[in-house]
Length: 69
Image (tube, rainbow, N blue to C red; front, side, top):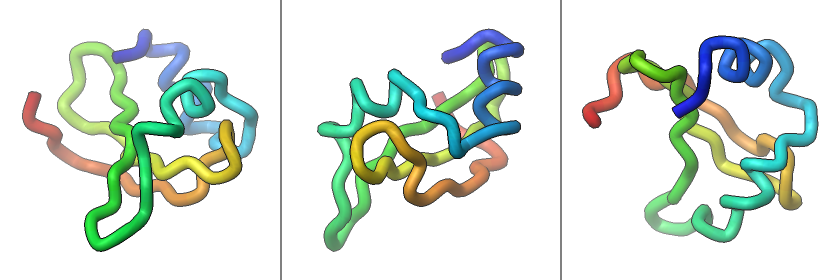
């Protein structure tokens, strides 16, 4: 989970290169079931599901209102 400012920077500009996406891209894949990253602000239940494209870019993103932890 991220600090408030890191999360705000991410959701404000999803087109910027993000090292954490590149570092975790190999965990994600498209197929019958899509595996993606959940990006959350520390202490919050909501977040953004991210499917990386070409390493460090957000290919697809979806808001998740309540993620069970």
